[in-house]
Length: 169
Image (cartoon, rainbow, N blue to C red):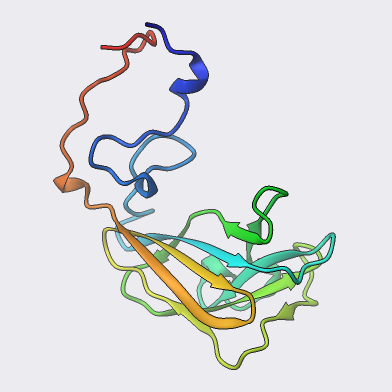
């Protein structure tokens, strides 16, 4: 049996590896961007945008723009996922509470932000060996943080299911 090439390019986790631990860019497990950082994805439900506007994460770390909206982390949506906006995976340091808020901007370099209006900021902290997904609703200060363990030291080596020529073992 020979599999079509499009199936061979899909990211697939090895047995025992949670799907969140597989990069969408390739099929390599990712625990951290480097030894001191974990991976975070931000998701927010926001119906307050107008055409041409986008939602961004702005916060107290370089990856979130250091509170500078012109350097904020962009979120994306599409017709199938709207009103949920989601970021790409971003590296944040382990064990540090990083404060952030969502903002709506008309263009990536604009500084005329519409900020969430509740007092204070949201926060996220990444534990070693996890991927974190932060799920929020615009202007609701409650945030759900889901951590997926990616301790690959406890995952058995995957058996080769597909040969290089695309046939099954």
